[in-house]
Image (cartoon, rainbow, N blue to C red; front, side, top):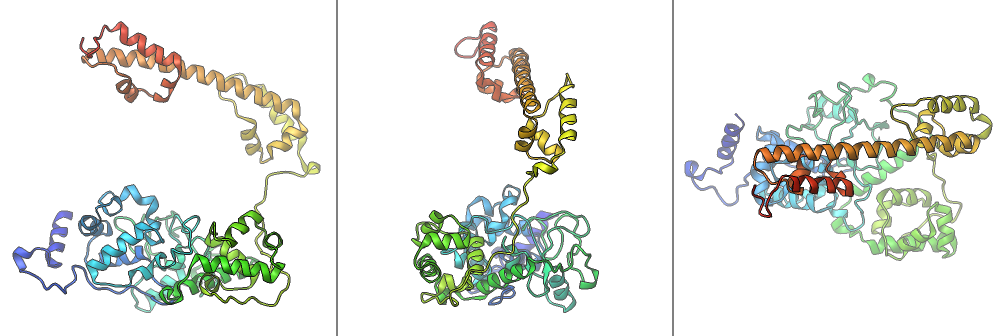
Length: 467
């Protein structure tokens, strides 16, 4: 059925020249559909565009890449083995080579000339790929619902793919990452992917504002205003024309150096203290020897009171009047370290003694015990040093015993494998035996390798491998 639909696709696209004759050279092989939201903060993502393009031809997105993109790319990310790059499909929207390759291919197939605008490729000069993109899809359910209610074609925004963006600035709504029907997260491009629908259960992801639950709805917490600023700032970058603004790492480094002059009299270490970043790191950024992630740029710009777009593109960057820098509203991650006064010493001591009374079975490390008790390992060690050392001693003994048991089992495994190979007149080479072992890594131990050599000799194989 699939091969039939693909064959029909080739005919409809003018690919079967034997049947329909030569097509005009100016005719595109795929429909010339236009990306959505160009020149706005909500420009469409390339993965969304690929899904819509496939839907326009009534085929799966995977089939589109396999039958048309693969021959032109000659690379794995354009092949039929889409499952091999499932965890990396976010990169199709990024500033790297995967996006650049697909842009060139799709522009050729559709006669488009600006598909780079629906990726982060135009900003590759100033954006590092580290911590730039989400691993799974995120969306604003109200945005999707509005598109559907107003009769517009549903698409997913490039803005939602940026890791730093947590809220929709239009609806003041935190982006959703799990399907409301099946609670699963989705990757950006699957074989049957459709914008606005779950790739697992095919449920619609949009919701009316009145349908939102407390968790999904707008939370007026102290971080919301900062998240809104980030969303608006990234949207401003996506809406800008990089070909005119010409962002560069030199402008970024110059802007940071100018900030040091403005806020700290040229003292990079002083500015670093105000920004809360290591001074060596900031020095490297100011001298263009290293480049900050987008999240770092956003954090710095928020504190300096400037736009990230201006920091990337403006050679004559102006800062607000010198004052104390704006502090971040983010709270640091809570650690599991406990105040000595609140440490439940009696409860922890009882639990440790109970563990030590167990004679058989697996035994946990002190780190694992601390996680189970939701305490800090160092706190337990400080309050109960003798019991902590005894737990660690028992754990090491258990590890040694488990290792010896596995080595013994591997030796027996080798003997049985060699015997089976002899029955089929196959030479028990190390590579062949390793491929059949349950734990081939144990061949690194001398006693296991000696067992293999002894078994080989006992079978009386010649050097050629014959009996």
